[in-house]
Image 1 (spheres, rainbow, N blue to C red):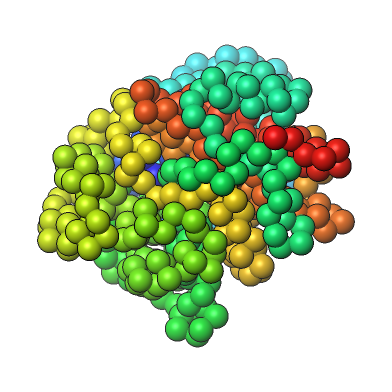
Image 2: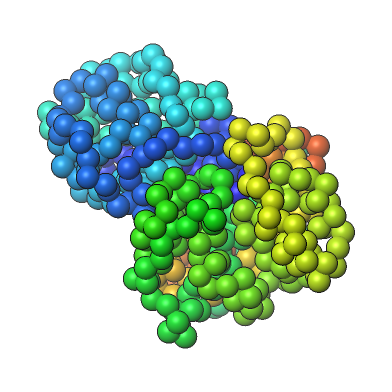
Length: 462
């Protein structure tokens, strides 16, 4: 339910990200990951795999799927299997992050080759939930020179903001805006509910990152502060931190990168525990949140899983209670409740999708992004995963966080141009009657991101 939007994609000369399969936002289905030896922050455990260079696309595809399914590897294996041009585009630590992100939807099954053209081939991959993904592999004399993961469907891109909005409203209840943030304020260029409160999914993690940055500013922690992984803070995927041995040490920077780039839920809960729930709540006001009463108490991902999927009746009671009552429910009942198992969670239909969530309006999310991107390290972390590739656009920087669950997808981008202009695109599509087509919604929201700013020159769109 709280997973990041998109699965990372690697090309020989560039690093892209696209949505993947029906779980395109990467946020809809918590699944049990395989026992990978690479953490979400990119740290490798000593590998026993033999370093070798694949010579055919078949060998390359098998190797990639083995890595996704937990085959141990270190930098020596990476150097031997992947061509220099690939490694230059994607250093080992970044590749390890990609592996962790895609592995979260596994285990993966390698299917037949759909096409083979010399040194390139396209294979079918089947995710644990049954969705098909296409894996494009390019092979050269010195190893794998290109990889590309893509959904097994084509996106019919609309040619205008109006067409994109029309298609989005067919998917569910749309609340979205494209805002000019060049001067630090958020003025709507495209307004389809810019001040309307919407559920966030994993986009709530922007406020956790804000609390971490604030703790850096007051000197209470540093990016290199070490945190020991604790079983009692385990949550469900997405992510991989829940699979680490208790006592495994990660830095705050590594936890933050995992929280944002692959939406690691357990990493998120460790950061909330580190800075304190009250510290996250305190950041809601300076970061511009406009749904304070609905975000207090500020839930961890584990608490959300318990309330929404472990005991939905308790979740309804939680929603109906006032703030003090909600805090009592968390302390007296949720804290002692078991975390539901991934296999025991029914994700076929929305559950309290517009009632039990984290909340903000598109304008408030713009304020949050403006606040965060003023910090260079936060901007670096937010720029690790752009969510959906910006093909044909002139963005110099793309910072992103998204999230989804059945019946919800939310996307938030901060984008900037070389001449210093900045825009924020934030939107959600909600359906209380059935799942949202996340692939379609994510790509249509990206159309707003890439086409909307041009309307700023002609007076905006409402």
